[in-house]
Length: 151
Image (cartoon, rainbow, N blue to C red; front, side, top):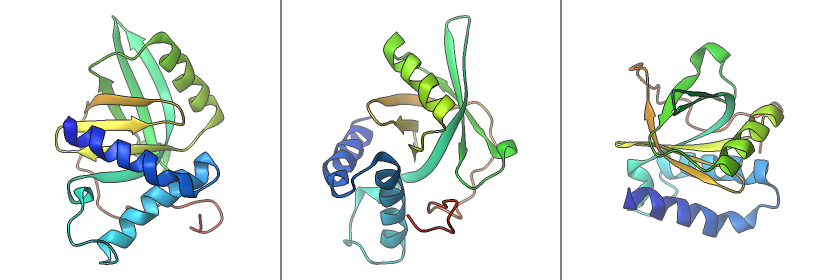
């Protein structure tokens, strides 16, 4: 869990370079692609993480358990990933998540060995655990936008 917090803190620190949230998300995800191509430092903590640009598709609370579903930008809705939030966020964060779902705001999904975290414009939802056991594909790991892939 400490590794996830370190990566998220680093993401926030270096994200000052881009002016808007959607551009920030695409910049972060695309930087990971450059590191994969060998344009990065020899050792980076990104080796243990996979960043994806996603949008929320649903938020449900049943019997006190919060589940969220996301789909990677550029993928069909049938490829959505469903997560259980093990540590429930505050009511304000849930309300913000619902707003970002309605606005289709791009978010950063951080996949790691222990689960996942979701970085949002003003909050981070940690302790996410996949419900289904489908294998995640490794490509494409970079962002695809509606204008042909340029951020």
